[in-house]
Image (cartoon, rainbow, N blue to C red; front, side, top):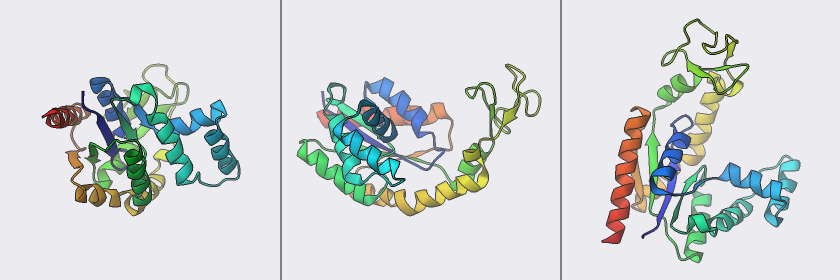
Length: 225
């Protein structure tokens, strides 16, 4: 069976986490989030984890070489032998270069970069409209798309609904500025390499999933021919 080594790209609020979970199940690929790797290595007290923690404790960003080292370790685990789905990395061209070099060292290659594209105003509307229950944060509503029966009151337990700080419009727009400045150039980077596949993230989650699944299935088939 050919490998499926995939990267998910897109702005905050594009639904990358949701789609990564679905594709992971569809194709038996590990969904590798750099945040999850970082927390696991720190918790396990590995050499890379201790190094990362020293930067985090000092309030500094964890350097790219440490993150890449963690990713290479993760890709060496058994469940990633037939492929992986990277979410949250790379975030810039320097990290993309480092990932490419690391994959060459592992005698592997990237299959595709999957871009879930959503315009800024759609992102703002999606995220700024979210409301969560103060008693159970898994009870989530949206003022436009999935409103509660009574304004600001959870249907399930009657508790108050709030807007999280990271769902406030000014925070969302700042995250989008960072995305456009640092991560968006990866679209052209992977397009030049012939690896980019675009998907309209304005569609429903089910439609986006269907298009992604069909594209990935085709990539796997093409690689076996």
